Length: 210
Image 1 (cartoon, rainbow, N blue to C red):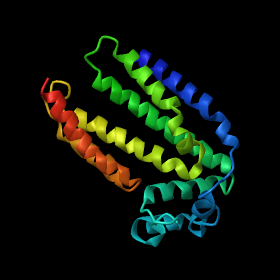
Image 2 (image 1 turned 30 degrees about the horizontal axis):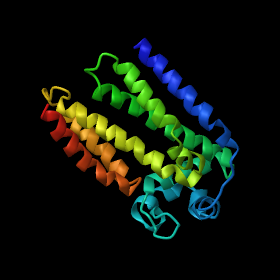
Image 3 (image 1 turned 180 degrees about the vertical axis):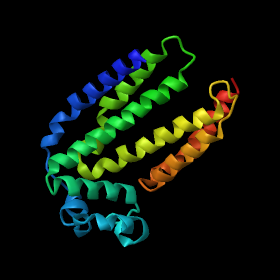
């Protein structure tokens, strides 16, 4: 438990150290239409409409249906107004949550390895600081990627718990329901999560053969 706390503190410190300077960023590109000129953000009463009406579609070309992300913008606006600092802080926190969940996921995947905590920590650190995430964390409207990653990792984690991995014994249906809930939230965040079932099937098949 103490090792986990230390690992969590390391991950928290690294994420904030890497992205702290993004707190000074302004709104750019799609942020104007998604946030600055989006009148639905001015009232929390818009949130139900994100899930049931046209307001749930991102105000960009293509109109993506991502009501969970829209809700996060609305909450940010309620707290910070149009101060970009708060929106960027939320982006960092979202990336941090995804990072911490990945650490737990890797701990489970490599549970039979002698240095499981070190492997999980190193793998998670690579994820946390990899430049591929720069846009998702530093650009407010890019948070969709980090946000759906939370639900992707969480759904993956609880699916493995459901299967009884690594021995695939003692299934617990409770974890399957939790996995499905996270998957459902992922669908309301970004379409990319539809790839998860394919990955789970591949993972399940591969490791059951060993």
